[in-house]
Length: 279
Image (cartoon, rainbow, N blue to C red; front, side, top):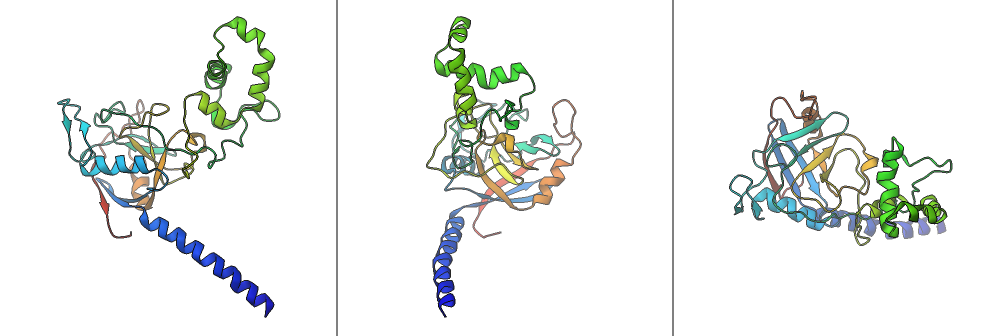
């Protein structure tokens, strides 16, 4: 009887927690992305990335003002309707949302990232392992890569502006690099994090913002075909595919130009709209 009582006590604690999680998930809006290859339904993380979700829905449904790339006038209309997936890379991701279809277009504004580096564990991962090798997520292939991604940003953060200062502060620099986490390295590159958010890792099926560096979000987004841990902390993950992943995979399989990974036959976004019913 004591064991049963304890079990019931545990259940009484756990059930409300599950119900709370379900209630939170119910607040997240669902969007139907209609494409020329079929329909994709995504759940947007309104609690984890509120500004990003608001921006995506506003552009999608025509309630958010943007600069028309042709007229250069401020307009409000469904932004994504008719745009193509301009970058498709098998075993990586599919990318869309560029009004020019080149990857260089934007809605005429930029906004900040919504990422919590601590919740993603970046504050626990070191730039160098015990053997002094750079972490795989840094994608360091040469000394110049390491200089650009770690050393030069660190010098700026330390106020070092000359080779003479580098020589004079070698021990200090060495100690900082040995103790540096990925979170610190990315912050030196300009990324800003928000500990009040709860971020998702960039796994297969997530919807994330494409960017050109820290704080350069606009309209472009991508859907992951595989887990991409090296992108952790660098892109705002703001949704996930809940239905139609086979459509995403079908888009990923189309023939593309070897130069820019642009589909030889356009794959279009017909519309993106919120839907009330659960998929």
